[in-house]
Length: 226
Ligand SMILES: CC(C)(COP(=O)(O)OP(=O)(O)OC[C@H]1O[C@@H](n2cnc3c(N)ncnc32)[C@H](O)[C@@H]1OP(=O)(O)O)[C@@H](O)C(=O)NCCC(=O)NCCS
Image (cartoon, rainbow, N blue to C red; front, side, top):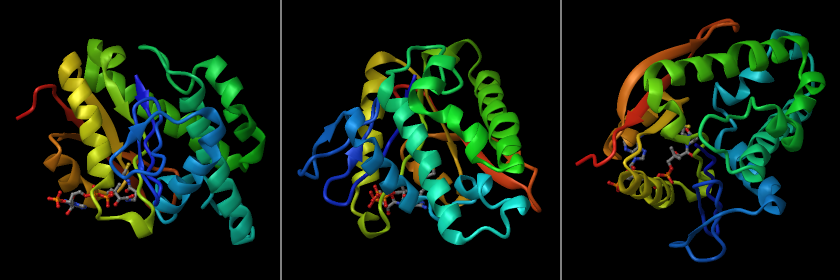
């Protein structure tokens, strides 16, 4: 099962099959598809300097492109990813690589929106690496787990407990259903954050087509963690 998480400044919390808050900071609710752009905008700002998120646009063959064009592409990638998670409440065993999700969310457009190198990075390195690592680490439980895909707070909304609230909303559900939770964190600084929420570091994986490797921390939270 996959999750997209985003927080908006006015009310943040989203989760579970993609949720967004409406005006009360304590409220967690499921996003509707017509809100995907707003959610993606929030994530784009949260991940503005994130090396993994920027991996597909900060390529050598886009070096000469105006920053605005790269930013628009960065936002667009997140829009497709959020849309993928809004459109389909993905049943066990499906992911964003599923053809129907690819079609409905618009992810297929990245085949011609990204540069040649960006395309290789996204489709032949990033997606397969995430997919294979998750399968390897979770084994038979892969299709029975919650997948925390993107979690981000607007820079101005950080430190207010919104992200924690969102994650805890899901950890409670995962505990009740006896399911593990899985994530890849793109910033080493977040490992401590997720450890406090019950996740354990399982593996470090690397994207290696750039000038220097970009690391991601793979973490799992077992149900009924104390
Ligand atoms: C990671 C992120 C989502 C946290 O969001 P946030 O809304 O600022 O976090 P919260 O306010 O819910 O923090 C809750 C708690 O975590 C603590 N915390 C925050 N960052 C931490 C860190 N790097 N290490 C340990 N604890 C941390 C806070 O002090 C707070 O602790 P408390 O509950 O004991 O007071 C946010 O920093 C962000 O958007 N980062 C950029 C995108 C990103 O890296 N996303 C995650 C990778 S997928």
